[in-house]
Amino acid sequence: MEPKTPAQHARRKPDGSDARVYGRRKGRPLRASLERLIEERLPAYAFTLPASATLDPRGLFAHRPERVWLEIGFGGGEHLAWQAAAHPEVGLIGSEIFRNGIATALRALEAAGATNVRLWPDDARLLLERLVPASLDRVFILFPDPWPKARHRKRRLVSDETLDRLARLIRPGGELRLATDDEDYLTWMLEHLWRHRQDFRWTAERAADWQTRDWPETRYEAKARAAGRASIYLSYRRRG
Figure 1 (cartoon, rainbow, N blue to C red):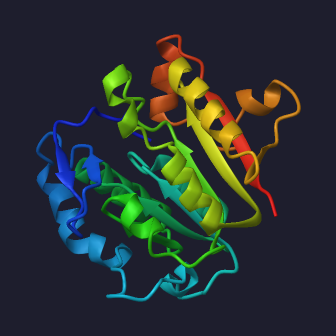
Figure 2: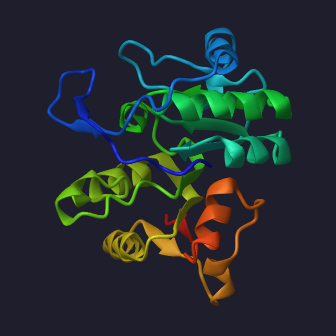
């Protein structure tokens, strides 16, 4: 996954509510090949929400999978594409607002020949608000923007609001996976999940459980390791 870039602006949600969405939608100008990839291939992966009804995510896939996984903030799509190839029986939804990351992810998905992926190129909260309860089997929040300044912490994706929504959407026995290489954000994650311990149970039993992952190292993780930052991987089970 690509490194997350601090937001340059904030915008209001499309529904006009006061909640604000932080994060850049565009970075450096894309090469012509990537612009063409977005124009020609994004429609095959993207979907829209129904006008008023809730959405059963299984209906987004031709094979109507029994399990649906969601990755919020997939960066460059390396992890998303690998999971899709490793688990063709699962339906995967990737949510990302950064256009450059979407383009890179499309290239990875096309290279992997992924047919079990759908993309939500907008604020993930809009999607979470509309999914039917207990419709997700696994959710990934990997290396979200840490927003290191104290006055910006309210912008962090891992929040009480997000965890309340995920508690509604992840089925009992389902999994929430988080990762970060920022020590302060790690503490933040652990504190917020502790406050939601009635909903989520940390599965770690030994140090190796939070020091290892079951996917290949991505470019972002390699850069963090080269910079001397340790990556921590958290897994929580939905109670119930």
